[in-house]
Amino acid sequence: MKERAVDDDNDPLRPRPTEDSRGFFMLPQAPAESGYYTYGKLYGQPAKGAYQYPHPLMMSCILRVALEWQAVDERRIGIGDISLPDGKKTPDHGGHKTGLDVDVRPLRKDGLEQAVTWHDPQYDQEATRRLIDLFRALSPVKFIIFNDPRIPFVGRAARHDNHFHVTLLG
Image 1 (cartoon, rainbow, N blue to C red):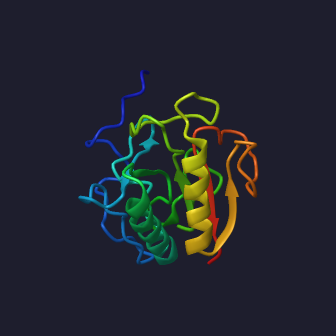
Image 2: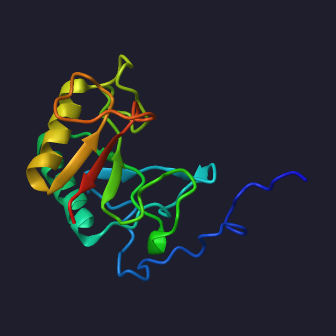
């Protein structure tokens, strides 16, 4: 039997609540002049906010980092997977259940809001380092994972070439 593509009619996470049972609110998806954009997939389709239920500490972190970043760089930062509503088990992450984890795209030199790996010529290593430093300065970071060996004080892990992962203490 052929598997049917996930759409609004058969999406197991529809409707997407603005607040989940933990009291976590969905990160705003397209706020004007916010300094960030959202991205991500769930079941191979655009996640449409399904993965973006942060703990209040992470919500504050993202909004603060985006605000501070916007003051020094015109490029928006890409915010990806955080947590499914109610901390449900995710199909493609071992973590991301507490709302204290977030995936963030590295910056591109051309400013496009698309994925880039740390070894791509469009990867802006200096700007990405500054962004990671901003997360560290403005929030209680437990650890950061990213595979660029030139970025100091980050761990390495499989599948972290095109995003860095931030986990907060909470």
